[in-house]
Amino acid sequence: MTRDEVRQLQINLNDLGYGPLTVDGIYGPKTDAAFRKQSQENITPEVIYPPVAKPWWTSRAVLGLLASVLAMIAGRLGWSIDDGQITEMLLRAVELGGLAIAAWGTVRRSAPIDPTLVARVGTRDLRLPVRTHGTPDDDPRGVFRDS
Image (tube, rainbow, N blue to C red; front, side, top):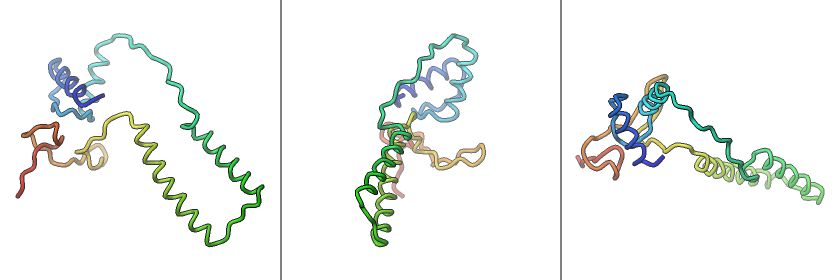
């Protein structure tokens, strides 16, 4: 959902009496709870579509198989590694793994990132301060003044 769609959803939920919700365009826990409550009370059948088939290169099983095959081919070709190269290769692998995890998380993200949420401690959310004045399109936290 885009920010504007979330804002419209929050307005609609407030109008239907499932609020009060802050209309900030962030689909947080309060908006989710109000939406779920509205969905449970409004008993209309939903169409459930089968999951979309994913491309082969996003399958972890296929990627693991490819890595194993490449390692086997390298061993058969007589590629040997000395002690100095092992450290360099491990550092490169960690670097590449970090980039892959960041890219994977970005591609697989199903909801926008809440820029105000710092941490969840138990059932409480620790958030950055939110300013209610200013335009929320510039910064979801509002306008900050210089001290």
